[in-house]
Amino acid sequence: MTYSQTIAEARNAIGTFGQTWDGIEPESAARMRLQNRFRTGIDIARYTAKIMRADMAAYDADTAKYTQSLGCWHGFIGQQKMIAIKKHFGTTKGRYLYLSGWMVAALRSEFGPLPDQSMHEKTSVPALIEELYTFLKQADARDLGGLFRDLDKAKAAGDAVNTHRLLHKIDEYQTHVVPIIADIDAGFGNAEATYLLAKKFIEAGACCIQIENQVSDEKQCGHQDGKVTVPHEDFLAKIRAVRYAFLELGVDDGVIVARTDSLGAGLTKQIAYSREPGDIADQYNSYLDCEEVDPAALGHGDVLISRDGKLMRPRRLASNLFQFRAGSGEDRVVLDCINSLQNGADLLWIETEKPHIGQIAKMVNRIREVVPHAKLVYNNSPSFNWTLNFRQQVYDTWTAEGRDMAAYDRARLMSVDYDATDLGIEADARIQSFQRDAAREAGIFHHLITLPTYHTAALSTDNLAKGYFGEEGMLAYVEGVQRREIREGLACVRHQNMAGSDVGDDHKEYFAGDAALKAGGAHNTMNQFAA
Image (cartoon, rainbow, N blue to C red):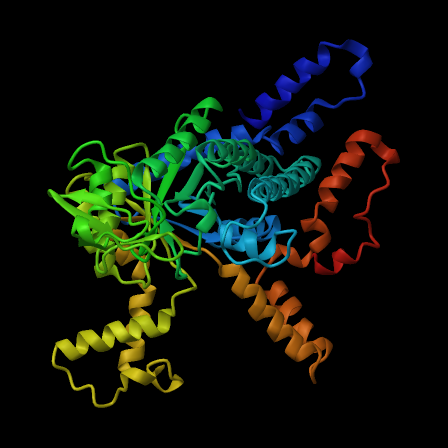
């Protein structure tokens, strides 16, 4: 609906009540309506699901059209990312936000900092989704408020050309509201618990939910040891639970990301129940580390399975967990992914121990033999030492090619001494093109960094503290922060405006007219940044 149509609609609504609503201005009401086009989280989930589905189809047609996101742990962080994207690239197309369970655990729990083991309050995740969208909608209100002010000035000046231009900008305005891929960990309980929590996610605005195949009460970060997976039927029950939540709430095209941690998970909590040879449970059990036993030599409390007519004893640890065969990780990943895609999942997430395109592509190609359009969400994780990994990859490639490597010591590749070498430059070039190359060669539709702002907050705070509490004093803030904000055009330098002061002034004028006591007058120090 255009700006003019929205005004007309508001005028009709106000007119219904005659003179009793004479103090309400249709144009002001229309502006407020346009500044808050999303009434509920369900509105957001429906809107963003369509965006994500369209992006998935575009990627299937052209792998250059992969998508990206950055993880965030506060609404302001997510808002500033999208403001920066619109500022630098003019559009939010193909850019999402990622909500990391790791960062919620580490930064948002009432228990204080926690490891990524699903010990934080599960409702803190949908609360963050709602917070993120609150900040994104506020960014819309702020942007549009500025356009409305400029429109009023153009009209007052009789500038028809600028008035027409601004009306077009308002009608074509692109919202900051984008898809959020939201991490539900392993579901925080059984399938019913997963369903109930998924509804909270969706009601807060999530169009995409990522769930992993670990045991809820034994869940570990994907880049830590001790991961325990569940049989496929247990995981599929949770995928179905999430789908039912989407359908119940009317988000029929909601997106489910099925994550497998099997590559690095050597344990399972239970033996899958198999109904017949070769079924999915039997395939899961086939990777158990077993030894053939003589019935006469059974030990106390032994657990046995039958395999190919033989009695086998799975290797069971003191923790009562069962161990998979070493080297079976990739095969289990492929089985997980095919089974998930054939039973309701839309996208895959394969958690790996390093960013290696060849390793990822090898698994994806096997999956695509069964499910041709299989595509991945991939964690470009800060848990990887990217510099070291890629320098090692270049070193090993050049060594295999027979190049003279006498100038390099593989054990010292992180050294600054290698930064300007041919090897260091080549490694950086591969890092730079990693997302593009992996999208083309390894089926990665969406690239994300889970924890970027955890690290950027720490780095920037360290730099400021070092200077401010040291010899630089106030210059550390002025030169390192404020002057850069001004010169790089960060809207946040006018922090009162960013926090909604001008939007509040507009509302005061709508509500009280000339009697409004507004904050943005001549004595507001934010005017120092008007240039």
